[in-house]
Length: 374
Ligand SMILES: [Zn+2]
Image (cartoon, rainbow, N blue to C red; front, side, top):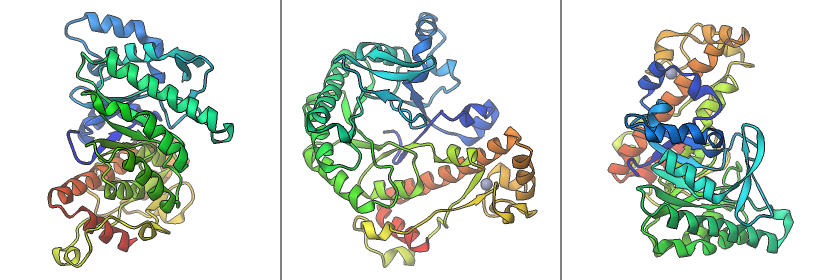
């Protein structure tokens, strides 16, 4: 991965697309999450793009020079991938509803999009369906992974397996073991971990990730945490060595009229020195909350001051909470745009700080220090 940690920003929920190219540029985002379901309908367009020498998918979607990450799972849709009795594919939510697609089509689409990272196609197993059904889904996902590794061998695409199964330890182990064969492939680079979204279950998350990492302990794999990319999940994941994070929270917050308030990021050297560098314990995260302003309900959003006077984003420099409240009340789309800009700016600051602490080898100390403030 080009950066550590790598924040993979979702292009979903409209907000990213609502931003004008000018706004996108100022935010300087270096990644984009491509949700496969959004692009199956334009296979012919993509083929045409491929035949034009100066055109590419990246240029087409105005995301040049970015790290593209392609996935079949779209967190924004409740059920984006459904089981199918056909062993060659799954049902994916697309423009015209749920349609069956073969893994072959998924790989063809990946070839046209040419992402830096491709998460292999995966079938979501349902806990209530019983052991045999879970095993069958896991084997199907492993089959998809093997096909992608073989079919895309001649490309530069880094392929990641998908580990499903909520926080259920047995399911996690089945998913990991059925995909262990992939470690022999040159283009297999890591795993995307699903099911870690549940809040306040830090202990179960510890047990689930530990089970996966035990299966792959001999290999130098990279992990991506799927989901919304809440700040606490990022802090937790980093202490477990996770390098990549799917990020949707800043957009989601903006859509719900919320502005993030990051905790203080600058620690004094002496404050970090006295803290342990060991992995974060689950109980250190329990009960912790990230603050925010909710423009739809809180009365303090009517003040004639910036969202965060210490934030250097263009919104906090030029606009007040009162103005944003006014936009929210009028149902102006610009409220979402401004809140997106502020929220993303917070994430960019966090990413930079984490990178700095990673380089100084003080990540766990710093995370511990942040958690103590919350
Ligand atoms: Zn701001």
